Structures are given as structure tokens and as C-alpha cells.
Image (cartoon, rainbow, N blue to C red; front, side):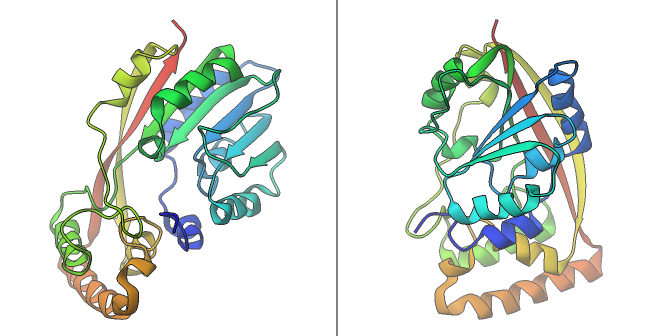
Length: 259
């Protein structure tokens, strides 16, 4: 089972979007160009292309999960831009020889990729002045508040101490900052931006979000899923009554260009 099997509808409905400040940063990198081609790797349900739809003229979406790609197709169907869908991995994406992207985005997905391979392949499919943007903001698993700590402990009670990454897998964190990885690539002129984000969740949106993840997807709980959800809702309702479900996140944007 792929780590995102069954999660696509929840992902489309419940994953937080891209902060406005991040969209503005990315838009600045292609401003003034007549043709502005966006290549979004590990696109999921197309959140980045959706946020940048008015800022680019062509979009290539690369996503290896067919369910996610279907959600992206539906989300982007009415947009006045040329959209091309590619059901493949970032490592295997092979555009025409003449293809050159002006902006490459990887949001909440770089940790799943063979980063060196992807960056190396991007050298031959990007414009000379292209920007590579690697973005992300952690998750409710990594958030540190009373309610997220209690929720994580409940998940661990059902699925074990280690963070899951789909069926039969555990998550292995990357220790190196993305800025260092980009700095060692052809796109070594690096900028880092940190955007503070405050999110207010509800019991329903947290449950939907959990089912969109690889660490708490519904199939992982097996026949205990209804029991888990009942207890999770009770926990979240209790914290809502005690002060709300507030998350303070840091959305990181690492930008790289050729030196």
C-alpha cells in the first residue's frame, strides 16, 4: 500500500493551504516574464498550483499517487492556465528535451524524495534564472501544544511509539536543513524565509486532517478505527471547551537559484 492510499479526499478537504506571504514570495520570482511555467513536484492535490494560478501561465503537476492527481485535476479544471498532469514520481519525471520551468515548487514532499537525484535532474529542465522553492511547516504530529501532545499520545497508543509512514513503515526524518542540501546543488544561491502561521482547528477538521496523513490514515487503525475516532473526538472536544484548538506553526520557504 502506498503511504497515501485512501487519503486523497481527506487531503483535498483538510490540508492547510499555502500562506499568502509564501505565494507573494513565489510570484515575485516569475514577475515580468511573458511565459511563466510552474513545475510542482509531489503536488498532492494541487494546493501550490491553485494558489499560484493567477501568477503563472503554464503548470506541470507531478504526482505519483493517482488518487491525489485526480483531486488536483478536479481542483484546477476551471483555471485559465494550461495544466499538464504527470502520474509519476519526481525522480522519474521526464519532460520534452526543450522543456524549461521558470519556477519549481516542492511543498511538504521533499522529505519523501531522493533529493540529490531530483535536484540533479532539475538542472536540465529549468530556465537559467529559475527558482527552486522547497516549502513546509511540520504537522500536527510535530506540533507542541497540550492538545497536540495528547492527540499524538492517543495515536501512539493505537499505532505504537514510532511515527508511521503508511502500512508497515515508520517515518525516518531527514537531519540536514534543506538550505544546506540546496546550497550543495546547482541552485546554490539560497534564501530562507520563515512565515509565522496561526491556525484555529475544530474537532472535525483535525479528524479529517489526521485521515489525510501517512501517520494516522484510517486503514492503519484497522477494525479499531471507530474506537480511535470516538476517543479522539472526545479528547478534542474537551480541549476545545478548555480554550480551543490553536496551532502556531512556522511555514519555511527555502529558495535556490543558480549561483
